Length: 238
Image 1 (tube, one colour):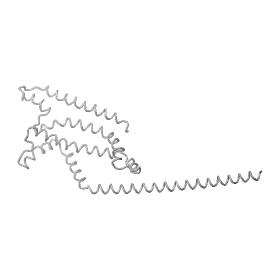
Image 2 (spheres, helix red, strand yellow):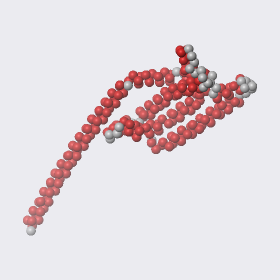
Image 3 (cartoon, one colour):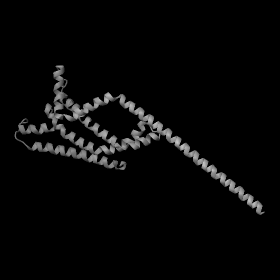
Image 4 (spheres, helix red, strand yellow):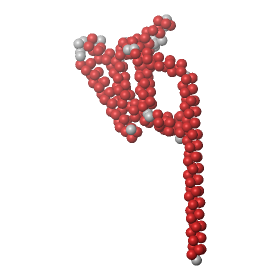
């Protein structure tokens, strides 16, 4: 009886030893498989990085041109740009392309769009670069495409970062519309100043200028409120 029990105990020990050996083999296999998978993902990430670098280098002339345009627009006064876009085409083509009824408004609108697009582009660039690069690399390792990484990882975090500077630029844009009077566009300040110089049968009236200031104050207050509310809605993405 004792011999049979001892034999059973030996057999059980052998099975346990075999199980330990098997578990060690399993762990070794899993470690090797994990290493191989990590190496494969690293190689895939390297290939995608090289492909992205080639794409960027291929569009280098466009990048240089866009940077030059942004540098020129940001480095020159908006008032000078309004004068150039409204008057210079007439000297070059011997005809005024803004000669129609709403020409001054269209010229001013185009210049404001170009000017602030350059400023916004720098804000967008800073917002994208502000997102940690490790998150994009993690998305690539997980097999996400560049579009999926941008829309699902980068975009929402970028929006959170760019809302405050964009609010400042929008408020500045509203106030800069007063510069359109340099090309004789009748904007709000023009209307208030007309009462001061007597264009409407009144002269020396200063109070209309105060009303123009109140108009800008109310308009910018509404813009600040809406953008502040948007910023609070995006607190989740901090």
